[in-house]
Length: 568
Image (cartoon, rainbow, N blue to C red; front, side, top):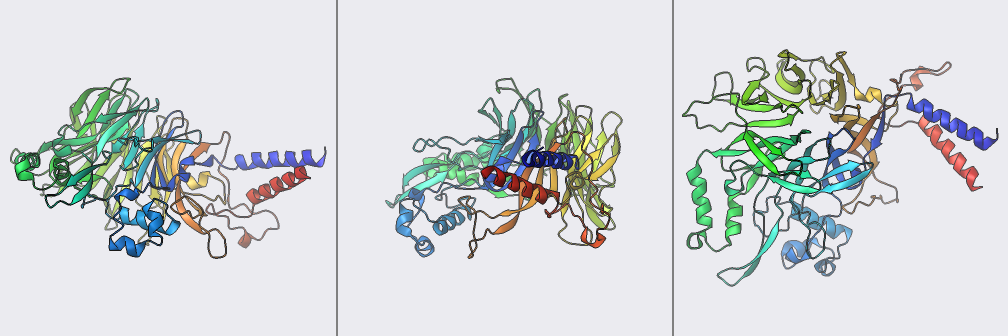
């Protein structure tokens, strides 16, 4: 055996050794190259992953919508003449992007709108853009990238569901004073959609007054889409009067009808990052049934687990967050808390016309159900007092036996959240790993309902891995997991180029990225505390966070040596 063959043999042996020293391989998604932050939301049977990208690189900036006579631009731009023709340097590009995105609601209705979130499907390291309600610009033949789009669920056929703003467009208008102005508006905010066979299907709310609101979370293999939408207006007369006034030229005032309606439809951000109309709608869980071509066959309004009194003027809502192939949906429903005037939200099961709560309001202050498998196992999280402090604890509920189990997680005071369960009964989610600190770090976990086994997923990857798994968002029946990982990587600027310091070295930062966790056939949990004979234990404190100069580095050196020999 010559030296080259010996090196190749050693390389192969090392690869096998590394592969069998863990249960999962960590594979970075290509979508990480599209924007600053990425978050996977779902994975289907074929391993396709739905991914949301926050702060995409190379956002389009329309120079025609910029007021270069404003003092803000005069003071802030370094090369205003170049910027006027759309030739932006790094500093000016960054400055303009920050300026345009600082007013996300565009209350002046004159600023260009740039989407902060894009949606993609990743298949075999290829990311495909999900436009939602975006359209191709007739001048550039590219998408406008003006409207936020979120993808939340997908089925085994590759159909995706989520929510998207309406695309923004411009209206040229001359004020009565003779001043020309260009407005930037859209016709609605969050609207549910399904993408079937590369076609976007609008899933309208039950009540679409002033645009209404609808959001889709999941779709099963029978093309049933679940989410929620606006239904009854609590004060219909007030909103309808405002809409009528916008459409009346004598009452509206000196602005286009579209602008007036847009002002009515202005929204404020909620704690979940979604949008909610200022007008108080009732909201109810909703099931949209689609055919195989994506056309809507029926729309079903889901009920509440709580029955309000006839004279109750409070706003109540229910949400369906997941649905299995049997048509059973889960999510949450609001109601009065412990016979008080406080409204709280509790996990709920929607089966036919029946809405059933999973947790009681005597033990838990709130809860939600996030997923259900085809066997009727439901997962979610509930908030209760632990040592006098509110903590969220994940649960598994069996519809068949009506039993709810709260498994032991990282420690008593840890908050834990279950995101998904597959048909084999494997639950994935995240939980806090630190006690006694205000900002607690979280790690991804896996829980096997069959063996009642809870494990930190960082224990299932290689020791000294460069990745720290912070959240596991979805798992398919092959055990492939979509997850988020913390890793140290080179920082990138708004163009997506690596940032260098004054010495020409890469600036390294901590970043959350999206990864695929692929099960290793025959893999086993690696013992990170193994000490070889003669080793000093004090020098062998292996950690699964951050790469060390171990087998991986040796493997890299071997590759370099082989390449050098080939070049010779």
